[in-house]
Length: 253
Ligand code: PEP
Image (tube, rainbow, N blue to C red; front, top):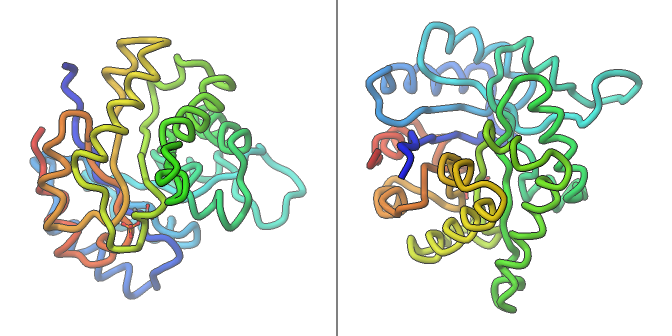
């Protein structure tokens, strides 16, 4: 098996304030060093990227964005281009989060365009995929995951997954306190890897597949222990320094 370095990424969503971010970021800087086994990234709201890029300068904490426009520039009021994120030192961009798919009607093909825009600007997309509760209950989880993955592969080709991260986030587990069991998550992570391996075994083996959905300090160790789980995308628990730091240190590799 390829040695995949664990990635723990914080999705702060629409939370934060200048003062609150300062305090939280200081605690993270204190708790994370180059020796921390996991790679750590923080994805604040767009408006705080400048503040956090200053604060994380000369630390090992990476910066990411929660969304990006699929377009390069122009008359698109309210949108943020990938090149602008590069200006603020972003290395990662979350694309296709279920909240964007759900509340802002982002389609599989739009998500694929955002994935592509991110890579064209030399950043790494964190592609979120995952099924709704009714899809799990009707045994369509694999069908949904395959559809969401294939839409991106069809647009950018499998080779693009050489510089990408996938986050499996069952929608029923996000912000609900209901975590997938490590075995449930592992089954889907393995399916994701097998799906990619149909195109390219080395890329499937090398790509990091994160789990997201109510990861907390107490369930992270069991999740991160599974063979195909390479870290987490953390929402609620990333807003509390101690909880997030505990998750960052719950690492097997
Ligand atoms: C998320 O929003 O990506 C997420 C996983 O949230 P939470 O950890 O709060 O479930």
